Length: 413
Image (cartoon, rainbow, N blue to C red; front, side, top):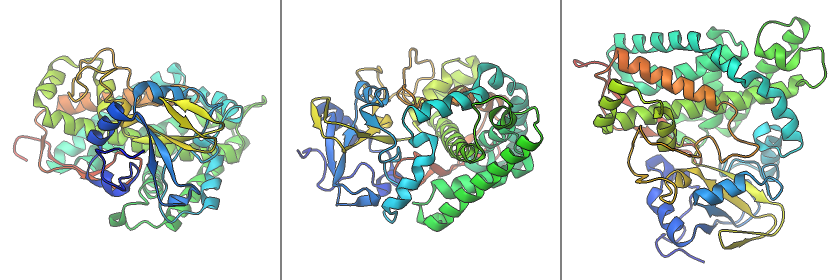
């Protein structure tokens, strides 16, 4: 049934909405009045051959969907709630080879393999190198005096971390950045990226990764690629599987952490008392509050495998179900004063890394480390960083992205 607080035709996956803002007031109204709400769409919007999807807004319901893959499938319609309005059903189906869009048991098999690269020991081994890289990034920004925080600072450490993790030469990291941008920013006309360019970028990245895998099979090295593809025992990734894994890692690890750092910086600079607190005390709870506040992935989706009930709504087999993390992370039943940016918030059971279950973010610990290292370097080196303009947002149906955030890195900039 229609929600009286929403204008007729409002769509929670409309990329034009997200280029202006995340629709938090509208999501809050749904949490209060219709926590699982049917959002109608014109038939076949964005290649999905249906008439809409369910908007899931409460923290508890998002967790319920996330942790029940038998009833809520990632594979049927993929996890991406809206690619673009020109995509075909065949193009959607191709995406199901990616681990993000798989269900158990195939997803379980692949995840057990790739987890080898994300053990606490493997992440800790990166810390010293990433701390030095974070410092060099901030030193370079400070020398420039002013600039776009997104490209000067936020994007660099996630890229370098991914390169460090999988053994990509650092001189190739800009290739990863370019391919990732073209795959994720297809809905923003300012960037003039067609779906054909996005598809070509995906194939170039997959081919690059497959060549890496083939080289390590031939000549193993002391890196994660060899651990995943070149060991002599059974249960490793094929070259194809490794290519798709690197695609997901590049987009997920780059886009999400970059936008968390950008939104976190903007939050600090618009809440100066929190920036002063961070500089003085460096709370261990900071990165979780930044991720909660930013929620870089607004939403993913699942598809009901059978008739079921959720939050009082009767969901039919085949219905798409959107998990709106941006709403769950502002649920007042879970978070006291969620509208307040509070880096001392504890506990902080946000769903910024997913709602638990089989698709919980593999790189969560790496992302936390990157956020901590970057903000420590900023606070130590450019403590007087300040805004020079409002953020310019990405046009995307599911990424809470920022293209530009102009800042001064010192008092005179």
